[in-house]
Image (tube, rainbow, N blue to C red):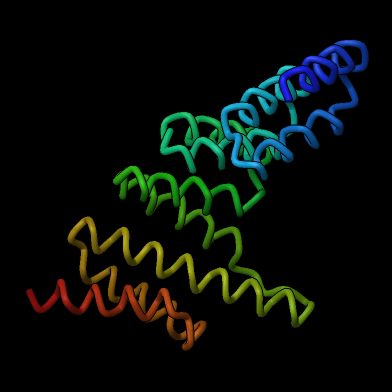
Length: 184
């Protein structure tokens, strides 16, 4: 594997504008569970093409899987700097903040995601997907509020999540947790 990476690294030095083959190697390493090699390969790709927000996101996801939250947040933050209109990055960074117990930051990212996805989509299928995603983010933000002890906001968000998607199982779980915390 490392011999192949050396070959791709040399090819990228000769043609730094073409990183697609290097990204294929990184994706392959990732799919095989070799996160450290994939992270290193994404690093080479970032050096070659630092304006690609998607590459930062791919590396951030692996950092997140490896519980390297500070690095994941840094990469998602760089991706946001490069592509500030990409709502999914805010959601992903919010998830990392939640996993790292940084609930204030998670709430801020989930709120930004919700603001960016507020407008309906003209295509009915895409709008249904948008509403489902918004439901899940409302539930995620409700859970962050719950963990902060802000049960009033948690309850409002979980109600909104269920309103958008009544069969959302995660929203149902969060609702039960919020009610349990409110009764305690």
